[in-house]
Every structure is written in structure tokens, then in C-alpha cells.
Length: 218
Image 1 (cartoon, rainbow, N blue to C red):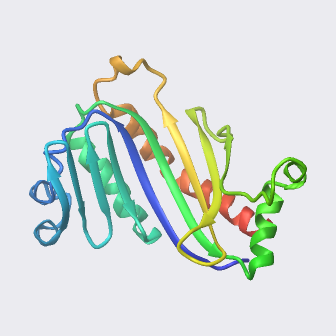
Image 2: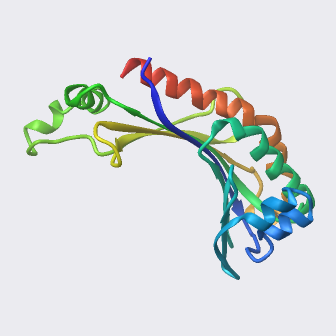
């Protein structure tokens, strides 16, 4: 199997948030992170409209309608899940409508021929050659139904060149969940937290299996 060069996971929540709350010292005062982590956090921005900061193991970005928890290290999955669950158990009256559990990896093709073969396999050029000059795959996204649960949503798989390395390939999996309730009737985070708690491990396992399949067959 091809070797993974980089990987990352992230959880995206869509709802109604107050960015001013989500500061490192608030997390530490609520014992969601250690006191030293709150004091030593790398702050990128603290503003009424946005808060962005990073710890050694996670980066948190908060806007009024979106919050993103992301990490470059998959061994921190449990820590990220615990932080999200504990945060919104405290802030359970925060309306949250949608959830995305995401995983991405980067690998490097053996050579230029192998790199082009990946694009040709996913998006054959035969249909394009007679109408455009020198076609090549820039990005491919496949949307599929979720087959292992009853939740509303979809899985999107994206494959594209990785611009930061020669012959690099980026695979992104977005496992998207929505609550089957009208948006203006959602008044807390209970339903999304329940879905996240029950499904996040299964979601990452499914993403891993899709990535493994593609890396073995491209």
C-alpha cells in the first residue's frame, strides 16, 4: 500500500455561536483543557466576530455560524471528541444544525507517470481529448449515500493534486450529518451531540476504509 505522508482530522459544527466565549482561558477555567494550555495557547485572533487559537494538539476556529476543531494528528481523536462533547454539554443551549466529521490524507505518487495514471483512472481523458487541449484532472468529488445508519446527510470524497509537493495527491472525506428538524426549531445541541457521540468512531473508520481502498486501487 502507498505510504501516507500527512493526515488530518477535523470536526465542523454549523449553528449559532458566540465567538467571544470560546477563548483559551474560558476552556481552561471550565477545566476542558489544562490551565497551562490555556495560558500558552497560540492565539491567532480574538474578536467579537471570530476566535482562532491553537494548542499543541488542536486548532479551534470559531465564527458566528461555524466552529472547526482540527488536528494534524489522528492519535488525538479521543481528545478532540471529549473536548467537543464536554464543551457543548456545558453550552447545551447552543443551537447546532449540522455536523461534519472529516478526514484527509496526502500521499505521493511514485513518479509523474503514476501521478497522471491516478487522474486518468478517476477521470478518463478520452471524452475530453477531441474537444479541449491537454485535459487533466484538477479535482474530483463523489457524493454518496451513507449506508450504515439512518441519519440524514451524505459522504463526499474528494481527490485532487496536492500543490505543496511534487506528485502529491490529496484525498478528503467529508461525512456530513443534518438534523431532520426545521432550522428555526432547533434550540440546543442535544441532537447533534447524540449523533456525534454515537457515530464519530464509525465515521472515521468508514473514512479510513474509503481512503485505504483508493490508495490500494489507484
